[in-house]
Image (cartoon, rainbow, N blue to C red; front, side):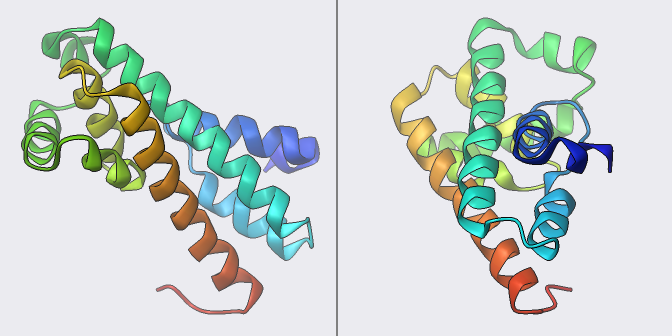
Length: 148
């Protein structure tokens, strides 16, 4: 929770890292910052941009890599890669919308890069998906709605 002491910069860093293969979760930080009365619009914008840029980092790693590298060096299971590949092949660039999903989102971004999907469309759908997720979290915290 030291990230909160860094304010919006900490939010950006956590949001970025949580979209990469590094195990972080920005959802709690977003919720805590809203609970601490940080500006909801700024929290939404910063978290969305940071998380999308982190996801695009995965995309570019995928674009530069090979499937074998993902399991060997990034410790992403063959099963996750296979599942992400099927989703990506079925939904093409729109699969980037689901890159916010826990467990498979990182792999989706990697596979989109590996398949050389259109980077602009990937960015757009990824930004929309991640932004909507943060909007739901912020509204839920702001109005005390239980998501679970």
